Amino acid sequence: MTAPLVVVGDVLLDIDIVGSSSRMCPDAPVPVVEGAQERPRPGGAGLAALLAAATGREVVLVAALADDEPGRRLRAMLERHVAVAALHLRGGTPCKLRIRSGEHAVARLDAGEGRAQDGPVGPRVADAIAGAGAVLVSDYGRGVTRHRAVRSLLAGLPGGVPVVWDPHPRGEPPVPGTRLLTPNEAEATRLTSAGGADIPGTGLAAAGRRGRHLAERWGLDGVAITLGAEGALLCDGTEAPFLAPAEPARGDTCGAGDSFAVGALDVLAGGGTLADAVAEGVLRASRFVRAGAASAVAARLAEPGTARIVPERGEDGYEIAARVRRAGGTVVATGGCFDLLHAGHVSLLQQARRLGDCLVVCVNSDASVRRMKGPTRPVTTAADRVRVLEALSDVDAAVVFDDDTPVPLLERLRPDVWVKGADYAGTDLPEAATVRAHGGEVVLLPLLAGRSTTRLLSTTKGSAS
Image 1: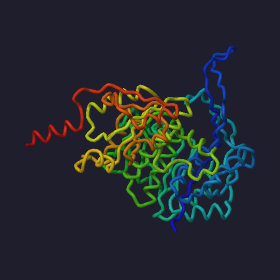
Image 2: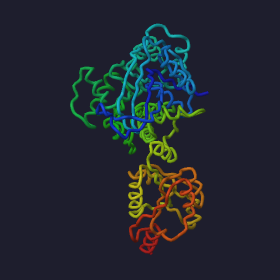
Image 3: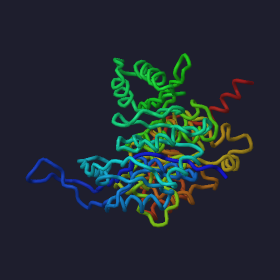
């Protein structure tokens, strides 16, 4: 049996108060948030543990919990998904409350200054760390990483157990033997300054210098500095650092660092390299943001019987559509083979995306294309077609269907707008009734003249002959 993944660190109770706002308060220049709903979730190491459990791994969380109302709420949410080995928290449970209008933050309120109380640990905590197959330390500066018995247990782990340390400027240095440190750019700057090093500048060059400094200072195998939309930079003692670029992602970034650290640890736990771990961490973080980030975790926790908090690889087209619909946005979809993507495709997708708040592309499977176009098609596989489409900034997701028409897919997707090219004018679209039955509409958009995959292929064959 695979040894569990153990998350060690500080847990917070995060609460989003989410509503909508269309007017300002008459007695102060602030928005009035109406129809508000409370969405609680574990934060800090608690969120990291939930994300780790979503991959199907057995997870044990070692954290300090208080016996107060927020602490009991935290424990109840966590124990549905992970095993909890608790230390004692002295003082009130740290709570972070965000008031949001749609996807925009209006205000944040912080309360609770509890800290982990030092002293002996029980056998449950000791056995959890000693029996770990891999460890993520999620330090939020609340005292768990300062706990002397916890640090001793972490330092005593066998060399084959990878440790990823997600640091905090108010936290503690990583224990010897830590495989990977994962600060963000601001944290790396503060950590180097706190160690007495003055490394000026911004950008990749400065991040590389800070990463190398931290790796040398603490004797680490690698330091991965996360750079937001630019990805993450790995400094691992080689001459040139490795940059893992991020996928395009817009939205709330709360929890993206936790998602990155969990993804990296998952690869290291399987024997992967540091470069592979950082690349996977960036991929997980990008898709986590696209999926709605920590807000989506709160929404999943509110669903009865939820077994998994977030999909292992991030949000799919159906989930994007559901999130946009919940926020009152417009879901746009279009479909086709998209074999040999050309300027006509790009023009149609750009026009379609402007009609709403997300664009989901429904892509014919390889078998479906063969039935329509013949045995020589498609030229590119469905997996490659999806990858090219999702690389376009106007495409939020691509979903493959195997039927002769997208009707079964559209029954589930329920787009507000279904887009086809103007070459379908005057034809009966079998999917039109399905789209309209769910309150949507079919729209035809103009095409670039003379652009089609069939024409491109025939031209290429003619030139070759």
